Amino acid sequence: MSDTFLNQSRLANRWHISPRTLERWRWKGEGPAYLKLGGRVVYRIEDILAYEQARERQSTAHVPAAGSRA
Image (cartoon, rainbow, N blue to C red; front, side, top):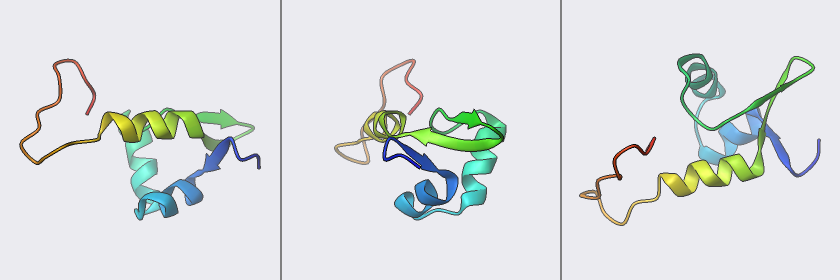
């Protein structure tokens, strides 16, 4: 697989979460954007980075802007 994509297992390892968490997020319409390619689920690196950046906080008191998905 190219370095431009991560599969569910590799993304789960990156974030130290269960692969089942990513499955649940997809089912609920949460988490980063993903692609289904030939029955396989993959995540684009740029979508992962955008998702991470949107959740960046400076403090626990930080409130996301209205309309953000964070």
